[in-house]
Image 1 (tube, rainbow, N blue to C red):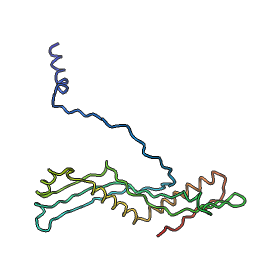
Image 2: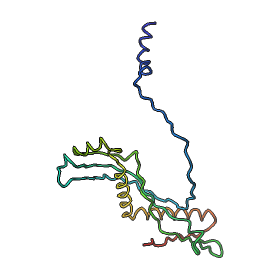
Image 3: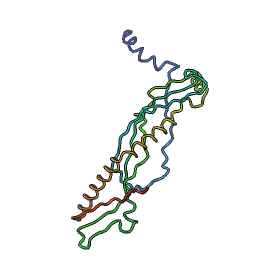
Length: 200
């Protein structure tokens, strides 16, 4: 009996530890700020990754005294979307033949959404800081603020997606196939989908 008590004693020690930390979730309820109707069809998504290399140097002091270099691995997505709102508003966007066997749809060119970084896959890979920078972080309200890194990475992902014509092309092809299937399901035998040139 005594031996059994001694075996169980270690499992009781954590609850008796006065220095043990306890985490409590005191978050309030989620508040719905607004509801929005979506009129975009997100037809393609690009998964992107980049290593952001940012270096801050001082003109007078060497890097080990005053300076910082950060390697930030950023991963995220950029979607290509087609706006459907003009189908009901713009005259001539939908044309149906007299025999109701053919339909033509005119849509704007696909556009890209803003890059969305995935926090679970984005992180600081390495950070080298000079002596002054480390001292400053000790007294800073928000040491090693990573928000500028996230903003820079998101901008670079958006620029990379903008330079890749394949994403928009894939989105328009997927949109065309989706609309063709939908219209044929409604009884149309001939379906034509046209995309207007992108506005400059």
